Image (cartoon, rainbow, N blue to C red):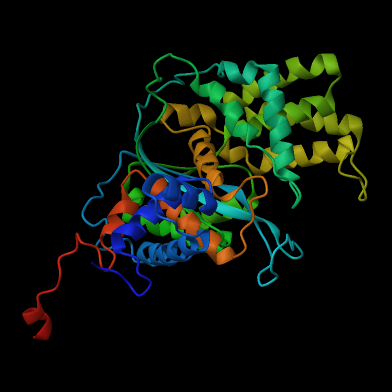
Length: 406
């Protein structure tokens, strides 16, 4: 019957893994299994099986999915790499029931998508005016509030992904997609708790397997964190670096609040945002320099809420990312200007590993689930195909005993 030492058939294991990848938690997977198939399997058993599979997935990934995804990859017309962080909460190990957060708590998940896409290029800016969502004051205020909350998140926070919800406003329109905006053809997903250096190597390995470095147009999109651009410089130097425009919007909105009165801040933001949308970052930087002179430089011990210190940080942000904010050129090249696809993927990953009262007793278990969830979210069917090739699968051809003996 194909039972292993724990009386679990390979087919049954596959069902457990897929179910756990798509449900909210180990407990929910156990409940659904019992209600649908009348099989009672403890969450601990599901976790053990999934950890084995997650570890095997990591090995398969390091080996470029040889024997699983061979011979399928063609050079894409447009290769897009996006990455962003998520959140997962862990307990201290070997402490028994309870929270036991000392030394642990919130951990950052590293997430990336690699998208092959198609789009149309043009000689002139195909969309010189910014989208309506960035001219909606409530929408922009919510984006800014969420971005600031995300930066200030602590181990006691369990923030809803309001930024992803707010970005839905960009996708609600029934108008046809403009031809310069990339159209997704195939997405693969990576997720891990490893540090950015190791995760950058994982992304590069997947990009090379998918022949992204041979694509005629290549883009690397993320927010303004320094580690992201270190990753770009180390692994994707030949990709066009693009700062997520939505992230820039939050800084411009905050800058207008710092520099202007309440009545002046919104029209000032609209003017600055429109200039940046058109690639005229230098004009905005010049105005911010004048405001800094008017307010004066911040003292060395300035608190974080000091307007002078806030303005100094905003100016530094724009200057550091200036060469990644040529949005008019990106639109002409048919490249993305936001990381909306990545935000959506992070939400899908967080659905499985983050939530109210959700803790991971074993960080290695969380790492395994991240690998499984990422494989389940990939468009190339790598999870079911990998599971079909694991030892004991009925779809595998058994070795010829004569050949094996020889």
